[in-house]
Length: 466
Image (tube, rainbow, N blue to C red; front, side):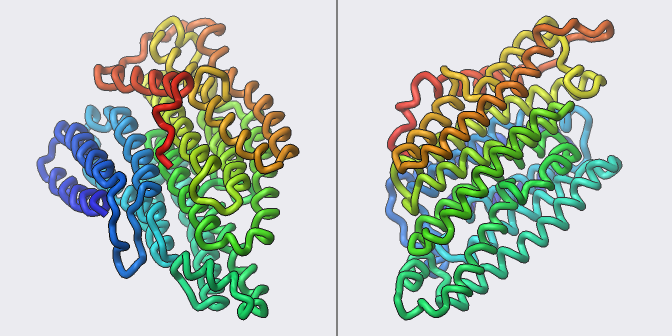
């Protein structure tokens, strides 16, 4: 609750900082504000709070842990908005304010205990993203991305809200624990068709938000057209909040309907892994590749939902948390390097990365670590994230799904190695010069690479958070 209040106040304060007509104070100001919120968030660790807003929002260790991921991700992402400062972007204060407000929505999605609070959180997060996707107003691709995201997001939100209405019609409840009790009651057996349709529509609505197949078709076009800085935010914060909300819905409200939703989630998982990895393998643009990569990682996180079997704590929930953290750090690193390179080099596709290992060894090293982590190579956080998810699934008897996920990971090696080959094995373009990187960006890149490696070597310091 403290985090929500601070982010809301700081978002408004950030708008007033825009009146200074100087972007120089906005970036350090936003980072300091987020560091303050990060500290206030963990002050709530192991603190027992009464539910807020008439039992609509709860703050517990689950909320605090996932909130920590989205706050840390945003802090590490902000230095890559440096070009907006140096170029004198006139709307920078509004961009930062929208990011802060979207974090409010993300926290609501992770702390909700009432279906209407889930809906409010999704809308606060989504509306901010619609605006940021079209922030490059004179770019037709950015306008197209915003329009596609808005239209498809509106339909998905409508489906989600219709699902909530059907769940309420079948049970008369909005609070998650009361929903679980009502679903398990024999008196409501005659209302199962309405209940099941409502559950299916909610799965569709949230599946859109996390880019799960077959509701992922918006992802490549929207990610490609959206400015890279906001694409990185979209592919990490939105996905983490979406899966935290998804797990909570299935584990707290719908364990009694597991026989219905489990086959649906399993089918979505397999389809997401297939379409995400195969789609990424045929891309010629690193940004579109990372978009399909985001889809494939939604598939791995869906394995955690399958293995959880309706439990909010335990091996599967911890694996989802660890994977979300490792994925977010590696994705911020990859998009951060891509943004710096694209600002300086004009070549399209993977050619923009050619020879980066010679002109900018640090950028190439960080990109390599990020690609290896996303591919699940040992000694990186991504490897242990996948390993924990697969171990949890094996423990629940989903051997076939695990084998399929391993095969898809092998497909992933192909497209994750392409940027590495371009950086180290392709000649430096004749007109290439070193990509300029300032001090704070250099420090952030080093931190991102170190965090990825530390998570892959010493994951124990993250144990016990869920």
